[in-house]
Image: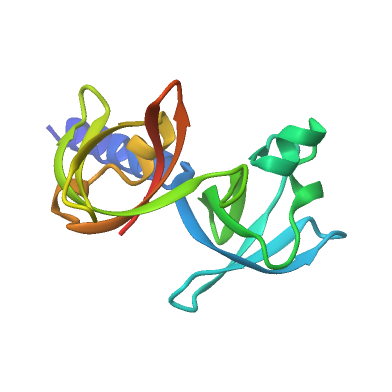
Length: 176
């Protein structure tokens, strides 16, 4: 019996350590406050005043007007102070590493203030009430469903960051 308890304890410890090593995915919307080209970091400040230092790596993907126009491969290259962005990142320890950066505004993500009505996680859709009183349905991009789709049905009023493709709205991020 003692042997089974020891094995169970070891398995529990192993599972705990493996979960602790996993990266945690998240996202932040804000304005680029500063850029350090040498360290490949940028500080993004949210509307609430919280500052996030984000590290850029070779795998970081960029979306937005300048990236599309230039065909940029280095996502960090086009990030500059004052840019409005949504950064999708992972956290390992205390370091935040950008996986994707989306520019907000002309040529990038559009925003809209909406109230959440229904979420269909299986279909990856969310139905919202617009400021004008109408209803719209957005398809959630995979990253949006993972990062901000949890608990969304209880969020009430949110800002949705989206693109349009063939007349359909695709939500990339929800700021609660």
